[in-house]
Length: 214
Image (cartoon, rainbow, N blue to C red; front, side, top):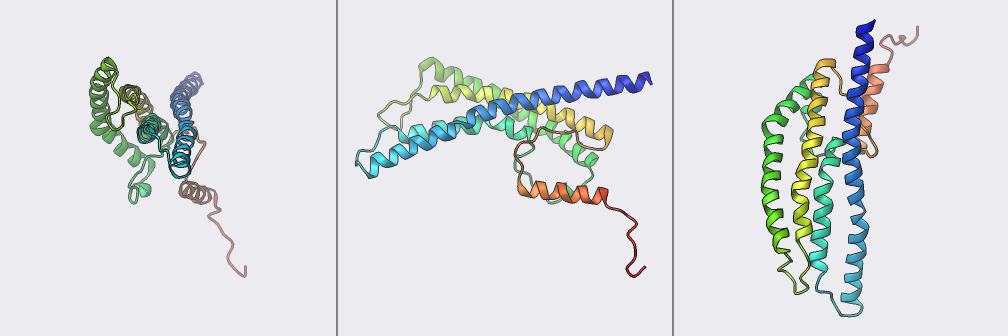
């Protein structure tokens, strides 16, 4: 009885830890998601100035790739927390959870973490140099600052690394329990929802169906 209570408490603490990391990634991703509105407004303003007033701006191109680049970078950990990165899962989806978790765990160790650490190291060098010289864009005479975007590169790697730790823990728990731990969900692709519905119906269907005419 005591062992069961300790095991339940351990699972509860682990779930809270995973949810904390998921929430952190979600907060960062959703905060930067507001840049979509800023980007939309900026592009609309440029279109109006260019085609209505015949007075194009000198900063629109730099503004667009810097804004979108920041959004893309800072949404990486959030996307990983929702298991929403592109996956060639034609075969993967057919495997049992333990096999999926084992493959994921190996790939995280061999590819993900070395790549993220290299990203942080290289990005830190780029960011330090860019901030030191207060780098601006060379693509327009407006001199739009680029160093804030480059400063996000190592920060992106840190958030990805933290979320990667949570994903490794999920893999280990899945290997032990035979099922994937729950995630925080707010947005799902239609295909994912359909697959989950089919899995639910398969698990809860009555194996003993009455024969016709009985």
